[in-house]
Image 1 (tube, rainbow, N blue to C red):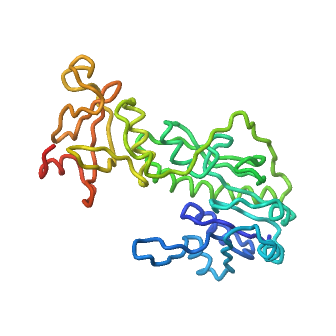
Image 2: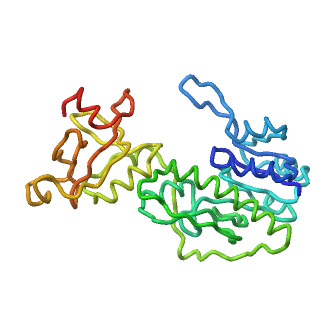
Image 3: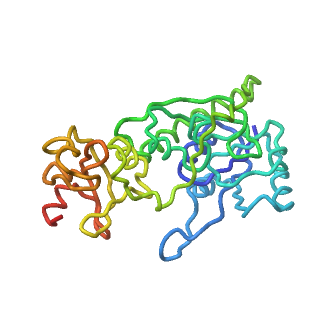
Length: 309
C-alpha cells in the first residue's frame, strides 16, 4: 500500500517506524516546518523528519494546506491512504478527498473524550483511571471522525503524563498496523462518535502550572503527575518559585485534620526527611521532589539539608 504519513513530535515516531517495518511504501512524510528549538536560535528537525531522512523518504513541510500548489503536490504522490499521528495541522476537504482509502488518524484518547492537542496530560490531570488510543477516519472538524477501533489501558496511580505518553505511543503504533490491515481486508468498522459526550483537551502552557492548595489532595497529586514533564507544576515557598516533581497524599495532617489545628490551604505543616507537608482543602500532601529556579531536581529532604523554609 502506498501511504503518506503526517506527524511531528516524538509520540508519532513509533507509528512511523512500524509503518516502515511493515513493508508498506511510504511515498512521502509531512511534518511541521523547522523552527528554532533552543535559546540560541538553532534550528533542529522534528523527530519525525529525522526518522524520515534516515529512511530516505521524501519530506514535505508546508506552512499550511491552503495553497493549491501544496494540494497538487500531495495529489501527485498518488497515495492510497494518508496516516496522521500528532501532525499539528488540520487538513482541508481537498486533502481529505485525495486518497481512495481515506485519511486515518491515531489519537491518544478514547474518543469522544479528550479531543484536542493534549489528551494525555488532561486525562491524568482530571484523575482518569483509564485511557487509550483511538483510530478514526478523519473529518474536517478536529477529532470528530468516525471511529474504526480503539485500545484501552489503565493509568497507573503514580504514572506521569510523560510515562503514559511513551506507553500510548507504542500502543498507538500497534493499533495503526491493525487498522491498516483491517482497511486492506475491507473489514474496518466505521462508528460515528456521540458528539454530546465530547470533552476537550486544549494545549497546555505555563499559566496552568501554579498549584491551587485550596484543591483536594487527590486533585493536586493528579495535577503534578499530569504536568510532568512539561510545563511542570509550581509552588511558591519563601518568595521563590519551585517546580514540584512529585507529591504523596498524607494520611492526615500532623496533629489532626487541618481544620482542627488551624491550618489553611497552602500552610506548611511540617518538613524534614519525609518531605514538605502542605495543607490543602481536605488534608495535606507531602512534596517529595522539587526543583528550585536554576537548580537541579532533588528530593525535598536533600533541599532542606542546605536551605531553610
